[in-house]
Structures are given as C-alpha cells and as structure tokens.
Length: 417
Ligand code: SF4
Image (cartoon, rainbow, N blue to C red):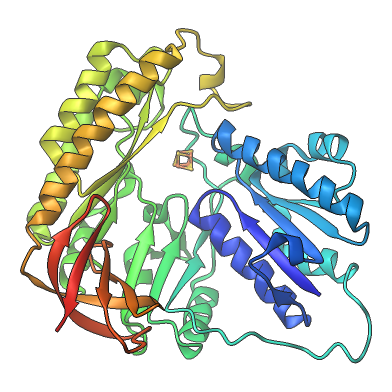
C-alpha cells in the first residue's frame, strides 16, 4: 500500500503528519510524493484561515475524481478543520472514508488499521529515517483565546506533555540521525509540567550529547521570561532565532485581539532580548485588516516594523473564523484596503530584512546541511536563514562553514569553506 499525506497549515500539523506517516510505515505501507499513485490519501487540514479550508475542499474535489476511477482508494481527513467541521465534511464529501480531528489523532493507528491488508506476508517496512531535524510537540492546545483565533476551539485547552516523554522522543530522534530538535507548541513559553518550565526543559534537552541544535516555536510575548532570555544567551546549543508574534503595533487593536500586552511592553521585551543576545534574529507575525483597524492603527504597525527591524515578517490578511470573538465584530475593513496595506508593509519589510541580511556578505557562517540535490546543498544558519552552496559531496546532517556571497529576499548564497 502506498500513502500520500498532504499537510496544510502550521508546523504542528507537519509534526502530526510525520506521526501518521510513521504509523503507516510501521504497518508496511510506503510513502509516495505522487497523490495519483497512492492507495491511501490523507489531507491534514488547517482552519486558521479561510484560504486553508478552501484548499482542503478543492483537494477533496480532485480526490472524488480519483475515487470514481479507483473505488478502493482510502481517503482520510484529519487536523483542525476535521475537528470542528466533521459533519460538514462528511455531508459534502460522502466519499471520504474517515474524518479524525486534531484532538483525536491518538486514535489514528486504531482507525487506519481497519483499512490495511491483514496478510501475514505484509512485511513490516520502516523507511530509513535520516531526518536532519525533528519536530517534537511539547504542548497541545491553547488557552489564550486571542479573539481572532480558532485554535483554542479546535485543539482544546493548553496541555504540557510530560517531559520524560519529550526527552524519550528526543533521544529516539538523535539515535535516528537528527541533529536539530525543534520544540513545538502554540505558546512554548507557558510550558509547565510538574514544576518543569520551558527553560528547564531546554536545559534537559541540551544536556543530550547528540543534540547539536535546538529551536522552538511559537512564543507569546506575555509569557517570555527573563530566565528564558538568560538561558538562550548562555546556551550555545539554542539557535539564535526567536519568532515573536507582534500582530499589531496599535494598542487599541492589540486589546481587541485580546493579546494581553501593549506595544510598549512588546518593544521593551524585544530590546531586552536584542541587548542580551546581540546575534539574535527576531522574526514576527502581523495581521492586517483586523476589524476596526484604522489608517492610524495601520501606521502604528508600519512604524513598529520600521523601528524594530525584524529579520523577517510574516504578514497575514485578517480572515474571519467561525466561533471566534472577532467574527462577531462590525467595522470590517474593506478587502481593497487590506490588500493595499498588506502590499505597503510587505514591500517595506522585505527591504528591511534584505538590508539586515546584507551584513552577512563576506562573513563565514556555520550552517547545518539539510538537503542535497544536483550538486547544490541547502543549509540553515543559526538565525534560521536558508543558505545554498555548490558542492559535489553529500554533506546532509553535517555542520559546515560557508562564506556568504549574495543575499536574496528570503535566502543567501555562499561558498563552502
Ligand atoms: S496564542 Fe493566540 S494566536 Fe496563538 S494559538 Fe493561542 S489563541 Fe491562537
């Protein structure tokens, strides 16, 4: 049996897809990159934006044609959209075999086993796992209820995973060849299991010899502690990159978003991090067109982006989500205004991040090689910037030095030293 998984959405979904793939591989299935070749297709959905849901339904539309040709095709829908729109998916797409929400993914192995052949000759096949980096979920759900966000409704309240289980997973990952561990949660800064907080967890993970690098995401400015800043500053295994979502530079909008910090508090934290860890790269998220966002509010966001000089900015157009508090708000910002503001900020922030990256020209940086194709290696530096260089050797999994020669909008080119 061949399976194909389409992952839509965030790194949490990437991680859930990896787990489902692992279960399928352990049960004798093989992974394929070609949806048309697969006997099992799983769409792991996201519900954070309307466009993500639209993508899932259009894929399901294509799969209907595939199922008409091959009625034995197994189609599964998992993830956040599957969690809150189970009935809708089942009634719109009657040809789907199973729907399993993000909170029920623990049931995946029980569900999928029903569709797999029972033949004893079905030799267990474990694909060689040579992942350079490994995502590890340390928390599930979220209890923050930002007014625009559907996550707390679909993924449930925040739960920290037992650190013993996390450490066990980290050990397995490095034994399988992983060099970099990426700890995941909707708000890793509020991790707490039995008195072990996120800083303590970072210390435990970094004590594992074979772990070469540690990253984590995502952070919430209201919970980013001084203790954590100190740990990152002194722990060389922790990468010099922090993703710190701002969402808006306007205090009125931040309040309406229920973000629980003011712009001034954010700026204060930002400066503290930058002063304590001079080589840090701080990236951020911005939502444009939250209901009621005036020109003045947008200007505050634009000014914040110029002032703080983020290493990279992910700018999203506001998308109204069912069940959320902001879905009930009036004062909808017209789409053409949102598009205009989006373009203005995007163009300006691209100039800023390119300028920041230009400081790397002629510098030798340490990178972890993640991929190798057609004599080109793809690597990443500690600041999470993608770097490409020519080589005739497969250096995947190795940490090497590269001299930067050119800066592109989202990546850099270099020469292996
Ligand atoms: S912190 Fe806010 S934006 Fe992030 S998942 Fe939780 S509710 Fe959503």
